[in-house]
Amino acid sequence: MSKNIGQALLDIYVAPKQLFNVLPEKKGWSWVALLIMLTVNAFGLWYFYSGMSPEWIVEQQIAQTAHTLTPAEIEQSRAVMGQMANKTGIISVAAILVITPIMLAIMALYLMLVGNPGHKHSYGDWFAVAVWSNMPGILNMLGLIVLVLISSDPNLPLTTANYLSLNQLLLGLEPGHTWYTWAESFNLIYLWIGALFAVGLHCLSGYNAVKSTLLGFAPLVVIYGLWAVFI
Image 1 (cartoon, rainbow, N blue to C red):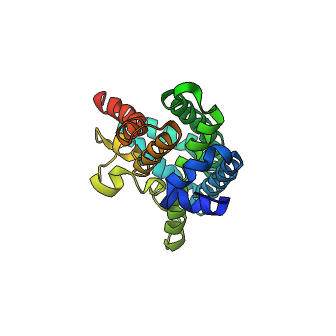
Image 2: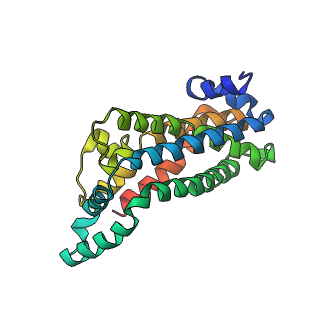
Image 3: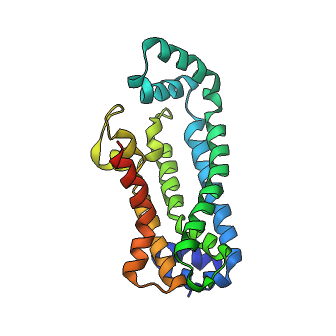
């Protein structure tokens, strides 16, 4: 069993069952975890963009959409993007601070709906599971910070922020390819998060391993499966 917040921050990566078993009685730990998550992610994104020139940011953004635009539209987009380029880091930080709690709230609602037989646990318990299950994202962001640190040029490709995507690790598809957006958005860290959902469901709901695993990965399968069908 996790005995304190320090051990909990380690257990979520190496022994998550020990943490989830005590989580309903340790709700305060989840607010610490959420604060750490938001702080690391906000700093990581700010640091990623902080050394880039506005011109580089604009050209990178244009490169992602150029295949769908006419030359006139590209120039118009370049002018509009140029006005906001030097604020990209701040905008990204603001977005992640707003979007992260919303996404966690949605995840918690899903977990409560599928994993709460007899209403044994409150929404707060499931929100805690959602928070801790997303802690692998911190390692993802720390990896990005390291990539920026060791780079000799701060003008990194914007796709570096998603360096663990299926596309970057395995497929290498270019913008404009039918499957590019799908593969680029599929971050392999999601598989770790799904596995932690499964552990959380097993511990709090008492489901067997198979049912917990199916429910833990169901959102990922449904979202990316439906997306793939309609590509």
